[in-house]
Length: 303
Image (cartoon, rainbow, N blue to C red; front, top):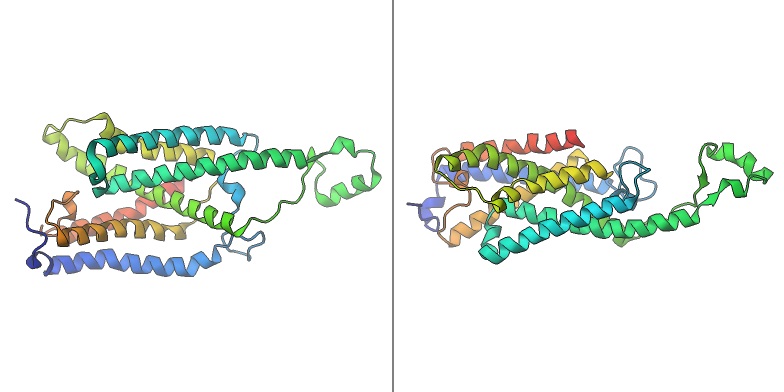
């Protein structure tokens, strides 16, 4: 029998207090890190020396220059359609209770990432076409002595084209680019965390109880990370370590959501290790909190 989570005795004990410390302390530190470093993460064309910056081209240009942005666009559209279809099917069969689970939160966030990425790639293909049309072939000006004298100064001796200077991005574009980076870096850590916990902690116990695996279950705990790794291979997005703070806030928000829900409604926990009534609850909370470090670190290493 599950304990009554809406009762006062469930919450007024030392286990809940210690678990709250494990959850709230990293979130407070994460907010401080965001406040300190995010303002230095400028998207201006000439950021201060040593600061981290983002440009709109990073969200749609492939990792290799000779790959056309259309290939990245095609992959992102296919990934978005697949993830969106999976979300719709699960929502149709199980309703909004699917968002009772952290895995579904992360799966939906990755779907949003690929949706935004598809729009950015469409925009990037048009920008790529404009950049090609703006370029001046060198063979058209090879007879101009003044240009030939300027080429060594411009360090363009080995380049087949001379490109016009790129205009700075608008404020709206810069905000969208920053949001896209944040979603990417949050999804990366969350996908590793959800899939690793499911296949190493939850699935072994389910298999002992003759649990029947379905396609949607495997899809939910596999495709999100696989598609994200493939996109990371093709894109040129960077992975600053201070954005680990958003990953902490993402998981912490889910835990607080579960606590608030259980305060008012006595329902079962989506994951056994979230149950605050078990004696080992503080240990479980601490272990899951520590798992955020290798989850984000492994993806940073892959990038």
